[in-house]
Structure formats: C-alpha cells, structure tokens
Amino acid sequence: MSENSSSTTARISTYLMMIVLIVLALSIVALILSVNAFLIGNEIVAGYLLVIGFIAMGLSVYVLLQSRKRAASMKIEAPKVMTTIECKKCGFKSVREFQRGDFIFKDLDACQKCEDKMIIAAIYKEVKEKEKTYGV
Ligand SMILES: [Zn+2]
Image 1 (cartoon, rainbow, N blue to C red):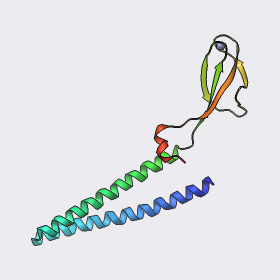
Image 2 (tube, helix red, strand yellow):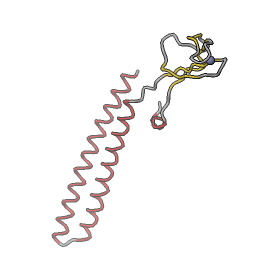
Image 3 (cartoon, rainbow, N blue to C red):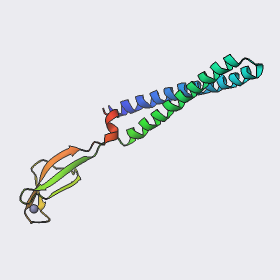
Image 4 (cartoon, protein in one colour):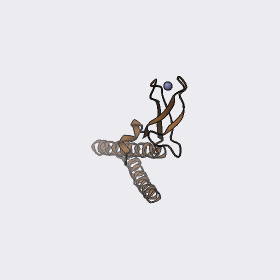
C-alpha cells in the first residue's frame, strides 16, 4: 500500500514539475516578448505580456515551493508511537518511545521516586501540528 502511494506521488510530482517548468519557460518568453514589444513601441502589449509573465512566473515558483514543502513533510510523516508510563502511587509520569510488547496497564519497573511499580497509562501516536494539513 505505502509503496504504491509513494510511487504515485512521485509520478505526480514529476508531472507537476514538468508543467511548472513549461509555465516558467513560457513566462520567460512572455517577458522577452514584452521587452521586444516595448522596444517596438507597443507599450500596451508590453504591459500585458509583462503582467502575464510575472503572474506565470510567480505561480510556478509558488507551486514549486509548495510541492517542496509537501515533499519535506512527507519524509517526516511516519509518526512516532509514544508510551506514557505512570506511577499510580505518586503520580510520577514519564514518556518514552513505544517498545515491542508494550500494552496499556502493563506492569513496569519500579518508580524513580517512590519505588512502587509503574504501569503503562497510555500509548499514542505523536502527531505534529504541521502534518495535520497533509494527514492521511
Ligand atoms: Zn511513584
């Protein structure tokens, strides 16, 4: 499943990159044509081409930056599973990464403070704020 989706996103981003590059090239052409039109003395056409060129360039750069951000967030997408350990006697809490065999209410080592037995109070996935928009 994950292999399929990652190859699909890779294909989409390559496709997107090509479109972005074409738009970027067209925007450069528009800017060159605008300079040409300006030199000829056709200032209205030059103005239009300049606006089109800048909009296209801004758009492609924006999409490029957006897709880079998305790619970066995909790399750190795998959320960590955390285990909260709690001492029922004194309320001492600690959080560590999930270890194989962890389950809720499992007895663990003695509490650092009161030497009573600690138990696993919660197991959860660590979700970062940034990843929310790109969540599955
Ligand atoms: Zn304790």
